Image (cartoon, rainbow, N blue to C red; front, side, top):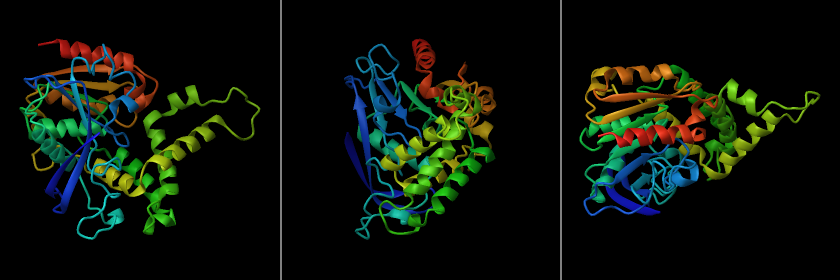
Length: 336
């Protein structure tokens, strides 16, 4: 883990953070000419330790092979894992931000990471890659700085958050708000509500096909203690232990605000400004960002390839189907 600091950071909403820190992780060795960089943009509750959450990617022979590539991943603004967020100390008050942390957007996340890249002397990368909200960041970065990435990979993502996705997020925030402790100054405030929020989110990440395939009880005589019940409780408790409710709130707001057309005319115009070679990857059973969400990317990015991953695991297919994804990314990277 490494940390980059920046003094004054202006936010898209008009607010200001008086000093930010960005915690980041690197794998491999940067070449003398700095021409072997892959930058990974992580998803909602992940972190900069790509090898911990994206199975079989940061390994020799894989598309994030650290013997070949210098892989960079940074925790985005709002993340509780070291980058400035609601759990950070507000330098103007001397106490934790908590609910006073300002609204952030995906563009703010990208603007912060562009400053990190500049501090590292990285002027361009071979590949900028992200899934889900990571894909949001890749898109925004490719539009804001068209010469930064030679290639971009947009996986299980969208150009603008849909009403469907926003409704899921609002339901999660309602669960957090219903936890009375969220409205206190307790550092653990809202965690019980966040566990419920995670349970709601999982429904959008997997969908009926995956749940029925993996969580159906073999014992049809049961009257309680169902596998699906314990799975939801377990997953909610896991996030409760490792995340912060105020961070989760602000990050879901950032997801909702995602719209590459904001201030740029239209989605189509914004996509046509991308100069990187692009790979767009959708997942057959993804109900959060279905394959149809990717059509506008394929139709408007000037240089683009499209691949469809066949998986019953919904949005989480980008984590589960690592063999398919590895073959797709390596094929894309092998082309001039």
